[in-house]
Image 1 (tube, rainbow, N blue to C red):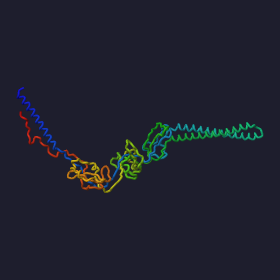
Image 2 (cartoon, helix red, strand yellow; image 1 turned 180 degrees about the vertical axis):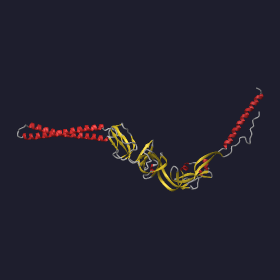
Image 3 (cartoon, one colour; image 1 turned 135 degrees about the vertical axis):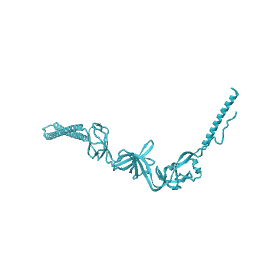
Image 4 (cartoon, one colour; image 1 turned 180 degrees about the horizontal axis):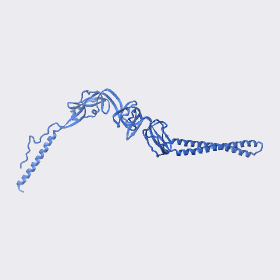
Length: 409
C-alpha cells in the first residue's frame, strides 16, 4: 500500500467523525430549548343548591314475601297457578297426590274404631267384674263363698278396671293417628296463605317433593308489589351520616334515565364483615304504584345526608389538583399557613396556579361547598393540568451560523 492511499483513508474517517459530532451537537441544542407548554382546565364557582350524599347499592324486594312449602312428601299431581298469577288467601295453588293419604286416613279410622270397640268391651267386662264382686261381698259374710273366691273376684274387678284404662289409652292413640292422617290429607292440598302474586314457582307436575328434613319451597308469593324495599349495604365510614326517615334516590339498569325516590325506614345495627370490610344494611322503602320495579332488580342508591339551598360551590375535582413545583413560581415558601379546618385549592392568575385557603362545607362526588376563606366568586378554579404538546421556542438549526471543517491531512 502506498503512502497516498493511507492518507486518503485517514482523511475520510476523520471527515465522517466530524459530521457525526456536528449532528449530535445540533440535536442537543434542538432538544434543550424545547419545552412543553402546560394549560389548565378551570371552572368558576357557582351558587345554588347542594346536597351531601352517600352512595351504595342493593337489591329490590317486596316488603312482604311468603315462601309456600309442602308439609308432607309426595308427588305433585296438579298446579293451579304459575308465575305472575294473582292469588287470594286460602286459594288452592297446588295438589300433591292425595291417594296415599286417603288410604292412611281409612287405615287409621279402622284402628280408631277397633280401639273404641275394645274400650266398650273393657267397660262390659268391668261392669260384670264389679257385679260379681258385689255378690261375693254379700255371700262371704254368711259363709256361702270362701274368702279366696271373694279375693279372686276382687282381683278380677281391679284387672277389668285396668283393662278399661288401657283400652281408653288405645282409643286416644288411635284417635290421634286418625287426626294426623286427616291433617296430612289436608296438607296435600297446598293453599295460598296470603293475598298476593306468585313471583316464583319451584316445582312442576310429576315432581316429587320430600319433607323429611326440611320444608321444600314450592312457591314464593309477594303480598303487595306496590310497596317495595331496598336492602342497601353502606360502608362503616358512611353509616353515621345515614338516618332513619332520610331521603334517598336510586336508579336501576332497566330505566337508566329515570330516578326514583325512597325513604330510609331502617338502619340495622348488625354488621357484616367481608374481607375485613365492615358494612351495615339500610332498608329503603319505595312506592311502586306503577309496578315498574321488579323484585330482584339492582338499585344504585344515593342517600341525601344534608342539603343547602344557596351555597357557593366548586367542582370536587379542584380538591385533588396539586401543581408541579415550577408551576407555582415558588409561592409555597411565601404563602401563609393554613388554619385548622381549612384546605388549599388553586386558582389561575397570570397563567399560573396560585393557592387559596378555603373552608369546606358539605359536598358529594361532583361538587363541594365553600363555606369560607379567600375564594372570590369570579376566580378561575384550577381542576387539572393539560399538556398542549407545543414547544415554547423554535427549533435551532444545527447548521446555521457555523460550518463544519474536516481536518486536513
